[in-house]
Length: 174
View 1 (cartoon, rainbow, N blue to C red):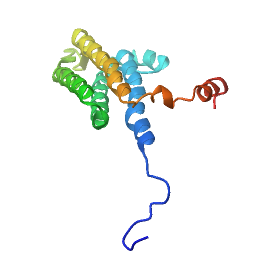
View 2: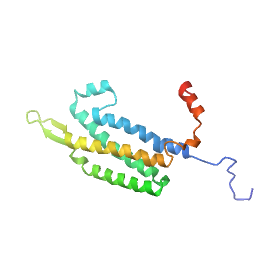
View 3: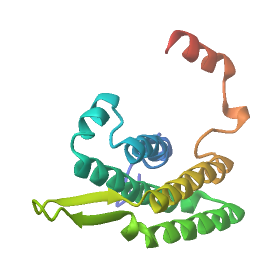
View 4: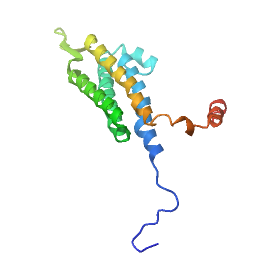
């Protein structure tokens, strides 16, 4: 070894799998949970029933889940962009523009009123706008998978898959 060089050993430092798991696959799973919270106020059925007794909290949780879903989608686009081919970057640019459109109307998702008798603030969801936003986000979520998969960020190419090993994992859990 020449003086001043760093010995990196025989293994190449490759963090691709870890990056993909953390920055691509984890957000894809996280989005499913956020959609459930946006729809029901919680991923858990029992918590949803309890939240029915706290309508302002339920509304706040549902709206926050939509805002976070926008953020997770944006991060997923940003974290995968460098690995995409030219055509898939165009698709992601379109999805990013769609996200901007949804983000522009997030401020009208709730309607705040005050109960004149007791001065308590009541927060309601503007269901029409909320449903439109959530549906748009679900479409973006669905469409984002194709460019990711085209660039092998979700599933490797079929020649990289050992089908017997995959079958063993499915059957024997290992």
